[in-house]
Structures are given as structure tokens and as C-alpha cells.
Amino acid sequence: MIAAVRAAIGLGGNVGDVAQAFRFALERLGEAPGVAGIALSPLYATAPWGGIEQDRFLNAVAAFDTTLSPHELMQLLLRIEREAGRDRDRETRWGPRRLDLDLLLHGDTVTASNGLQLPHPRLHERAFALAPLLDAWPDAVIPGIGPAWRALDALDPADVADVIAGRVG
Image (cartoon, rainbow, N blue to C red):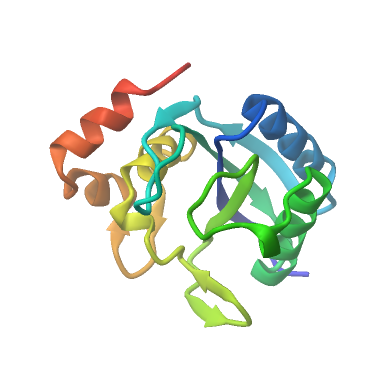
């Protein structure tokens, strides 16, 4: 067990009742030992990322305190995805999916081991993750990059405007 740190996960999906999948994931996350104080961003309807033709995504970020290690938290997220019906082995990378849970930040952890990379390797390039991150955790800092708001400011203003325009709540 580690001392409590602030963590953030990205939630995304574009197949079926995505809002319900988010509620399911947040309920499971909130029931997990070692997770407390969940703050959720509004939902954002955003264009797909990765060059695959598909429906728009719903995206959000949940920030919370946790005593779980990064690997324990990642295992929890993968279990929640499976319980929601996700089968990563049958998906196309960046393709359609009902629920995607990405570990974005875990305190000031920087790691690339056992299939886990923190901070999320493309977080600072993605307005669809940064905008909701700042809603849920306004003073978030991306280790090795700096304040999340600065990363958002550095992106193409048109991309940021498209994401902000997609804010649902």
C-alpha cells in the first residue's frame, strides 16, 4: 500500500449506451478499496482519434485519491472494462468500443514497465483528454511536461475549440 496520491483516468466510448457504461465504471471504481473522492468532468462529444472512420466518442475524466499502486489501479481498470463487456483482444487499435479506461496520471509517477506508461504517453497531445482533466483536476501537473493547462494552451486552438464545443454538461 502506498500513501494516497491523486490519480486521473480517462473514460471514452462510442458504441451503445456509453453514458451508462461510464456510470457502471464509476460505480465499480467508487466501490474499490483504496479509491476515494472521485471528481468527474462533464462529458465531451469528440471526433475519433487515430484515423479510423467511426462515430464520435464521449469522453470524460475522473480524478480521485488512491492508495493503490499504478499497477494495481491499472488492473482494476482492466477488470472494470472486462466486466462492462470489453474484449481488447478482438478490437482494432483506436477503433470503436463501448468503454475505454485509460490511466492518465498517478501522482508524480513516471514509469514505463509491464505494459504501463505514466504519465499517459499522449496525454499532452490530446485536447479531448486535457480539457476534461482540467475540469476534474484544475491544478493537474503532467510529470515531465508541466501544468496540464499549459499543455492544453500549446495545442492547435482549432482542436481545442472543437473539443470545448463538444462539451455535453
